[in-house]
Length: 397
Image (cartoon, rainbow, N blue to C red):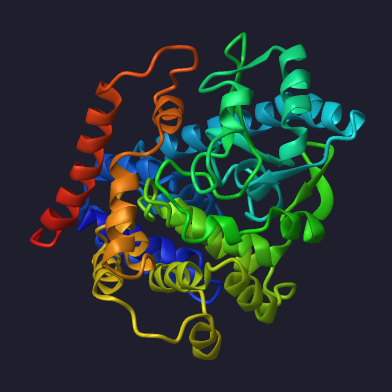
């Protein structure tokens, strides 16, 4: 009951037509809920700051049980300070890149908090995702090393040798442990599960060509153009290690489209999604976002994105989503469907269970160690657990 309340109340609060009319709903339903559980749930979903923002905006504080408002307020302003500190940490990094003429694009996180969400503290961030050009990665590593950052998960030489469709990033941490960590990407598709079905068709040069110059963290930076932003967030949310497991992934897409609705060219989204072989992922993602939010996208646009019949696995995935059964690993059903034919599906599963050794080592943050067969055992258990959860959730009441 509480889980459905979170979904429903956020959909109403973020709806410009209904947001101010939820007082009666909370007044009637609120006393029946375990608010401690609700706070934990919203925090795990990444939307507690979003909820508090609208409670403040619509002056609904008096409807919350004693102490609940104080907890939410404390967490919200703690995140505001955290985001402000992140800007302080990121500015010299961005300034250094600009000084060395290293182009970069800020992905997700702080860019969305600053430029897309109505309030800067509405979105938390665990690290800063930055896209650079592959030929600049060694220079980036040198500059970051000089600033006290070290790559934690792999060396530059080894990571750059990863096959396309797998991990295409390095995780940097300041030697003094200060946050945020820097996640340096050189390709937008970044996953330990094989994405060779589309990764090779996603052309980073297209992203750079259309990227927008702006400011992030009080420094000159680039962000993805609105259309590429939508496509990227849709692909990101449906990665197997996400699978729309948190509501914040839904609201990232919701706010990009809502805040940039007068700038987004849907013809270009459709064209680029097809070019990148991501039209099905965009269609499925937008279907999920439409279900959970007040987002409206015409049926004509949805039809143009993807008009073929969905497979059993894709319908099953959507059925889980529509029943609020969102969990990591479930989008393996979509990835499996994107591999047509028995042989291709077997090839995908084999590579999922047994990716290249360097991928497993990087994912385990084994930078300088030796490969152990135990890494494949852990991987095997992880994938099986995803498949078991999909089967088990079918019978969850």
